[in-house]
Length: 452
Image (tube, rainbow, N blue to C red; front, side, top):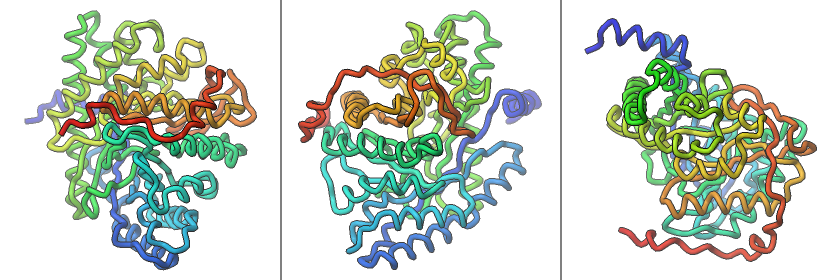
């Protein structure tokens, strides 16, 4: 039962500590939109999305007013478009991207995800065409997000797809160089991609999902940091307990919003993703949580250990608060979207090698990192391969979202605005992996993939 203290605490979290629901994401299956004629397929895609999601934004706004809880984004995720396009005789993939854009604008959502392909074990019909079309698709749309899953613990890593994605990332940067290379901020390369992720740019609606579903992603790093600041110099066991209790409260709010949205829209409730998603706003930073634990700066020795504690405690607290937890669920470390990480990167304390180590113990991976504009495609592919290997061997989701800053070098900056933020171009190891990437083939799955 709620008491006055609980109510006042929640008000403080919202007003002063940046507590919010980061996104309500409606997942929509497009499997019944397949057609050999691309015009009919695109028309069916548009009609279904606009029919299912016509009240999504209004519902989110009504729930905001009812409970006083900020809901920052209303989004849509769809079945990987490569699956839908496989049936088409004409595989002009960009037609589907334009259709998704038109539907997103009509529904009034912030982003639509699912311009995607799942190629961890090889290429099916439509997969190569979609990957090759990604740079153009992201250049001619504003709301469409793209993702490609190139590896898994069960399948290994498709190195031919890794090579293609290095080229796609670089081409996407070049196609949008006049807009601070924004195309790459809407493109994620996954290993072990989840089917129910509500967060962009990696959201898609998996083939095993219901026809339509509501997934919610919560936030709240500012709330965790504030709780730690009030706790003072307690030991790390007490720190973990405090984070668990705080994550429980944050996730309960997400469960409330998800249940209400599901009821109002007449759509099944899927999952709450309890990830701590930072923003560029000061005080809403995962890096600041780590520094509140006792690090002088995020990126210092001890950062990986502190992040492991944080990620585990968030999951333990959140899983008690919701009947269905899924998606990515943990602590995000997107550099340009986190005020503390932006500062640490500018000061040279946080480097890409440290970020790679951190991804072994937290959600996702090398996220929103600006790299030099002259970075070759094979180096980008090698970054993807390294991160996929961490995910494959550790049976966890990892991803890469890097932005080659065309025309800029280390120390210069890109600015995307909004939640995507901005930050410095970070240095890379310039030794060439070209021969390794050029071998192609597949990195075999680790032995643990045979567990069943």
